[in-house]
Image 1 (cartoon, one colour):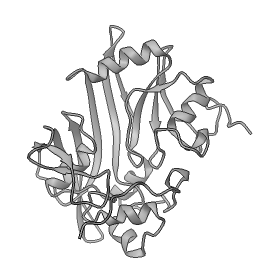
Image 2 (cartoon, one colour):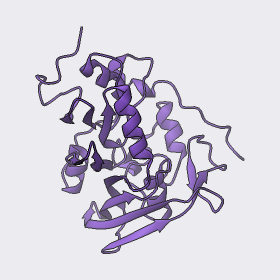
Image 3 (cartoon, one colour):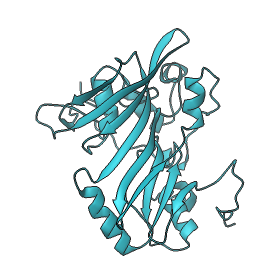
Image 4 (cartoon, helix red, strand yellow):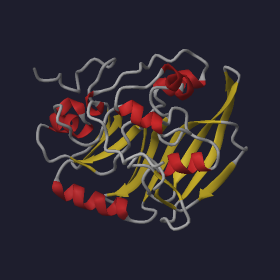
Length: 273
């Protein structure tokens, strides 16, 4: 059975949330828990699969990508020429402005500051995809601004506006954890990376869930701006309900389930003694 047309689908359960659209591009709001790349579990199991269903052809290309658990804005090129031109734009220094919202553990200092720490592979971790701050890594810098500090269940948390000034893998997550403010719900950089291994094998414990607090890490790509076709463009995506409810002291409605993309364990290295 074909999914409903996204222009007429019920807003309570859209399979693709379209923020803006032109003849060249499509801007969508990716939900947390959905992978960007194709999987073996059908078109609905990935963002690119849903995009191609929406477009009615296979020419759609993701210009930027987000981690599976990160929600927010993704720009899609509708055809090869747009993919080439937008790809060049995103590869240029300072040509695209990105801003994220994160909820982190601890009380951020007031105002704005930057985190500069080179990043590279974490050779000591059993998680193959994990990177870390290391002197011989690639230069990376992230701007951080404290938006709000709040207390919940006796613990301090902060809402941060985060601007990546470089584009390294997991940069925001690593930098915030490196500075002492890990993102709520982060299974790799939240203090015990073996939680990620238990996630992908379906063996998270009740203690894991208690420490993680949220089923997905609280990071949202909320703003994206660029100049394309001689015109400035700026798109925004609203704060996801999971983050809003947690910030406001409400019970979160997100559930601890794994989608099809999680059924096969991610590759991991042998544990280091």
